[in-house]
Length: 199
Length: 49
Image (cartoon, rainbow over all chains, first blue to last red; front, side, top):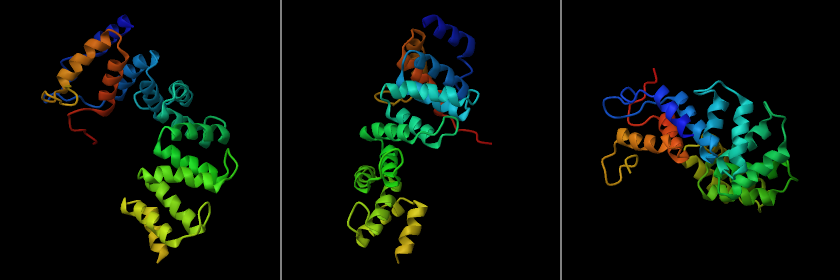
């Protein structure tokens, strides 16, 4: 590792050139990917997740969905919540990997249990829509609330929907309005529309 | 310390020098940190043109 790192430094860094006159460091995805790779190869979970992200978006490395998934999975296997969420998204959308809502839900739940707000919201969606799990509005409410209380606008809007329709909770227009407002106050456009439609 | 400007003037160059020392010895956290600095860019105005 030392040799690889040393080689990398000598080969790729011009120490004088990488700083500008104010001592800053310019964004450089390729160099980022190279360093992440070294850390990722040593099992650094966050580096594995970020490297997956760079492969997924073709930033600094050629776009490669399988490599992205490979790295996401390595980080997810270590329990990294962000990577679990990404793996969930890949399984859910099924673009380059066959769609598997059961696996997606499982990943969302694992990330959600660690307090990942987007994953909690998606976990709510899975229960709301019966995707990968049996439809269960009460469980949907549980997950949406965890996310909503953390200030996640989309989950707040979803709580508004459930109070409006009385699914998983007793129908309550005031509470629906309260949740819509919380999301709308954050500048969430679709929640602002919902607030408008309440009048 | 240098990255976060705790107790010293924030100096990305100094931070990078120390991170490189650790990274060259194979320290995964330092390698990750250097990657993150390049990923985000630090202390320079980004040119989006």
